[in-house]
Length: 354
Image 1 (cartoon, rainbow, N blue to C red):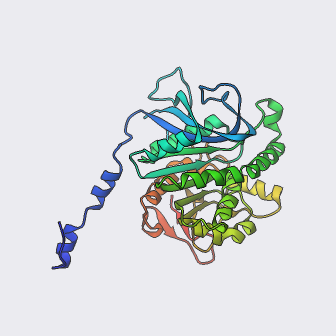
Image 2: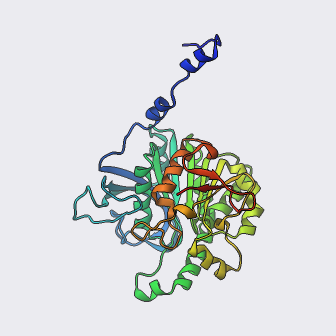
């Protein structure tokens, strides 16, 4: 029906209701236990378990050639938001479970994403000391809790530590090793972004912690090469990335995405420790950046079953996911729930209220 501009009230009555638009976008209610396909790209070296997605599948050293596939994950309806407790032998409605793995090559991987009924893809890049299985479970949890209608892809670079007690205790050496692996993964990740941006979907990119060492230089490089506006939403969570370096590449980052949202916290103890190690403030410690919606989440950073205990894992909690849900819907920051404008002398633009 064509609406003629007879009166303002007539135009309003002809406009589609927002609720109808959201209901049309969110076909799956995600209101019961669900089996979810988590697409993965990983440069981790394969450990031998070619049909599994657990801790015995991929390690923490970079492989020359990326691996592609799908991890089939049971996401329980009764899980607490932020918790990804795994137990294949318990009630599927209470525990996350791995249900199998499908290996593909790069062409089949892209073909599966392209053939999806949804026009959106969410790419997740994890941070420091996260094993492959944890990254996959986290991606599945976020897809479910965000009620995300499209396909979710986890890019898993070789973060983590030796399973031995000594390897877990040596935090500084683990950090250095992870930092080195992150830098090695910049070129492979840039190649991945070029390929996935060619499938004609709306690509959202979500990053956490040291994952920004992989992502941000890759985005800047692609921008410099002439690739512009190939991302819809770029969501940066607690970026463990040098503040001054971030500012140097900021114009390039702004060229790659329609919008950039950065969640920060001055109470992030992991970033405080990183500052001491690296000798400079981190981008996620709350500073204003041109063209970026910087949101302080310190008020809502309450640990959930240990998640966020350092003030660093808030990206998968209820308050942040509630805001990210609205980000993915395209709602302007000042019009989203529980957002207040920050003071002119504060580092952030906005605060997420408790």
